[in-house]
Length: 276
Ligand code: A2P
Image (cartoon, rainbow, N blue to C red; front, side, top):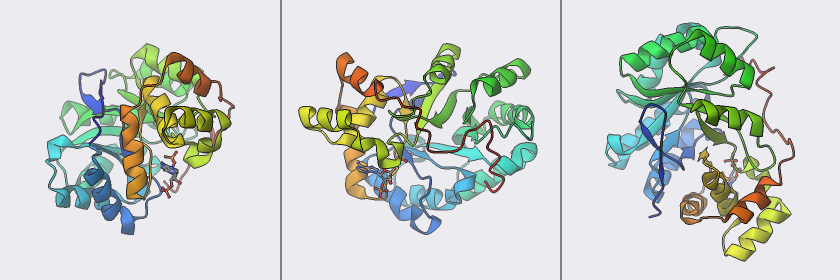
């Protein structure tokens, strides 16, 4: 099984740098998919209350026989629950069937509601009570980080953002790193689209790897935490094996050159996602 490196977060907690994301995995398939991912060797699972599949993740973990402390679990606070984070956290713990969440994130800042500071203050209490080993944010732009840091005490451990070769958010990622906030990439393969880039294909041929392994190797090489999603066991294994690929500086630069501002998801400055 490939050995996935750990990164150390700003509070000393370690996180497997390559994890498995379950965004868009239907609840009915989630237990099977996560059991497959654990079987393939993933030890870091990323879900969210809004995905509606926390119970499937919890069932897979319980059925897997893998010790709870060997699995890093991330879940996220729904947009509609910024004012009721303590209750939402309890609901997530119950759905997952665990006492402690390894990483709890604010899913979106929803600036139109202006409640993310309140949510964070509640999450600081959850963290202090050791309900979560680390707390962080997702989809935060620079202005949201500035507002949060000016009003609160705990610096987020991570910012989980859309990040892939054709959409790198370089200024935001650099700011996070300067603040000690780990950069976690969602849609790391560009939801599959970035696998068709000529530079990715050329490097895959040169290195005897697959395009997905090249893109994931790039993320790992530049220090991102990364959570690719697949419902297929063979692709789960293929993606996990990217942990064994080390790209050279020139190879990393060839992928970095693909940045094109190609956002797939919504702009967090606008997004309310009230359904999430
Ligand atoms: P599938 O779930 O059918 O395997 P991202 O993680 O950037 O959101 O990308 C996920 C998308 O990329 C999914 O559509 C997934 O399809 C596809 N995908 C995941 N891993 C691979 C791979 N190794 N090769 C090709 N496509 C992949």
